Amino acid sequence: AWRNCWRCGGSRIWNPCSMDPHRTYGVREAATEIARAPSSVSQEFARLREAGLVNSRQLPVLPDLFRALARRWRPESIDVASLPESGTERPRDPMSAALRLGFADPEREPGWALSDTLAAIAYGAPLNTSGAYPPEFYVPGRAAMRRARQLLGGTTSREDRAATLRVIPVPLITSRRVAWDTEWPLARPRFVALDLAQDPDRGSEALAAWDPPRRWQRVW
Image (cartoon, rainbow, N blue to C red):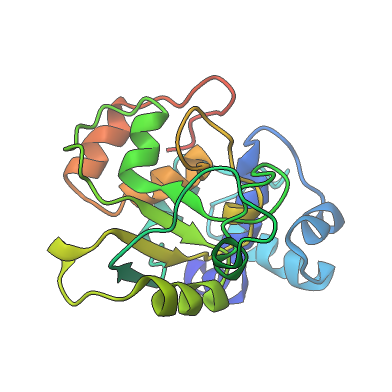
């Protein structure tokens, strides 16, 4: 059942539910939130209920739903050889516009979202890295990914990468970023946690010991 939900958009249903795991979403409200037909959303909610991943009120069953999604969380990614400059986006900066960095208003417009290890550290996760650890970003769509490959250059060696870029599995990752005390806007903790969950050893250990800031609730 979960495999069918993933193909048909179940992951996108999970995301509005889990933005506030104690908030009940009706079918039409969830459909508006994720830009899908109410009929499709109703079917996916039914499949998730059958799988025991949401309850009769369509609230997520945690951490089961998080773990089920984490098993299928495999965003497309590339490594790039350089990074654009961070900071306030200049409206007429061709590089910023082409790459859709989105620095002008990070919490209200789509743009790059820092995730995985460095974002988790910013949120207080118990992880350590070297000062040169390459950042990992979600970018708003495949067109931005292709443009980044052209402008920033690719690399054939993981050791030579300046950063890793990932295509968003769901638009919420880059359309609802967090302006934090960091060089780059962050993905929300729940998406960061999904990235950490891909490392069965280091990531699982960090998740077990990490509670996000009070603005968010733990779902893992």
